[in-house]
Amino acid sequence: MLKDQVAIVTGASRGIGREVAFQLAAKGVKLSILGSSEDVHNTREDLKSEGHTDVLSFTADVSNENDVDHVVQATSNAYGRIDILINNAGIGESKPVESVTVEEWRKTFDINVQGVFLSSKSVLPFMRKQKSGTILTVASDVSRYTISENGSLYTATKYAVQGFMGSLAQEVRSDGIRAGTINPGKVETYFANSTQGDPQKSNWLKVEEVAQAIVYMLEAPKHMLIDEMHIHSIHQDYPRM
Image (cartoon, rainbow, N blue to C red; front, side):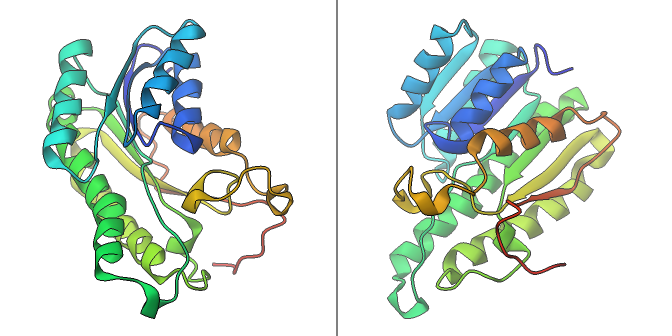
């Protein structure tokens, strides 16, 4: 179902974004991946070593409009269309409000919120022309449950993303474009530069599981929109909706 579609994946240097790229490539998707560091090119080379040749990679800042537009235009020039956007790039850490600087506040909103806005805005003309496309954003469970102690900044960005994506879904559906979010709980990834293999993370979600859920959302019938998906480890405590 996804074979020969074209996907842009942000934050693909490592973690969830990298795994999404591998799972989409296994489905025959043509890829354009971007990351804030040169590591994103390692992802491309690793994909190619497994026989996935249709991969473009870019070092880009998702909060910079020129960077984003360059990636999107280059993707369209190379493949002739854009079918999927996965907004995965994000940053965050836990700090009490009085410890958060204005610079940290702005940078986190620039990447987590403005990055989603700019990437979505940039691909929409191509998807509208095609009368098809899917935009999925990796948000967080804290966008629905205000449960993160010392996480006011990160939580605020994810609430903003939910509002943006919900409104976007209504705006673009008449053009056959789907927009939705996936809200993972705790994931064993590199969030906030945390240590991998920490025993306390042993029961957390794995990046492979989150990527599988994203692929599931993408493979839903074209007339079907999964507005939101919430996934948690059964070992994670969280409030019921």
